[in-house]
Image (cartoon, rainbow, N blue to C red):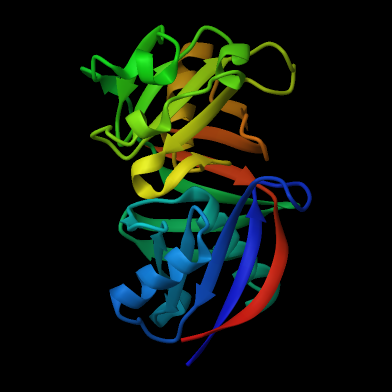
Amino acid sequence: MQIRLYQVDAFADRLFQGNPAAVCPLETWLEDDVLRSIAAENNLSETAFFVPEEGGRYQLRWFTPVDEVDLCGHATLATAHVLLRYMEPSKPAARFRTRSGELEVRRDGERLEMDFPSLPLGPCEPPAWLGEALGVEPAEVLASSDYVAILDSAAAVRDLEPDLVALAGLDRRGIAVTAATSEDPAVDFVSRFFAPALGVPEDPVTGSAHCELAPLWAERLGRTSLTARQLSKRGGTVRCEVRGDRVRLSGRAVLYLEGVIRV
């Protein structure tokens, strides 16, 4: 069996930036063990698989090298880029059915805009050892699908050198570390994201985490349209707009390779 494979740099203005995702179009679903094995072999933070459904919609699933996840922003952006640029270039939007509900990605000039559910943060009791694992005591820790540690400055986020072995013991998907910033007038807040328990020590750009971060900073900064920068080694920019219980995330994507998997 041959399966097409695309690798796309998502939330990237040019190659070798943003977050690389593998995208595999399928005619029908393969066994989950095969999907997991492909994702492990690709060894990227996520591999997206999608299957066409009636009405021009697709079922979309995301796998890390370790397991399936409920929501992945950058791999959704990468999938929409493949669909709307190479497979169905006349379509204005791509619609997906996922474990997180219905998702839509629309063309927005040179960017693609994703409509995702908002993931509000609330108070939590973080592990007592979290500050030691991060190497800095957060000013505040909140939680939703992930822990979110708020630091005092962008520099503190950039300079973080966490204990990834310790963070693998978190009882949530991962942890986003974030701060508001005035270093760059074009950027409102910064972040980094770690999910070592899922085989993702540090994620280059994490779209789904911005479903948590955008509502947080929209409330604290007093505006609904924000620009975020993820301060990983590769780096990436995410435009965010909070609309009630939805978050619109937009960015660019660049195709890196196209090939064939033989299973």
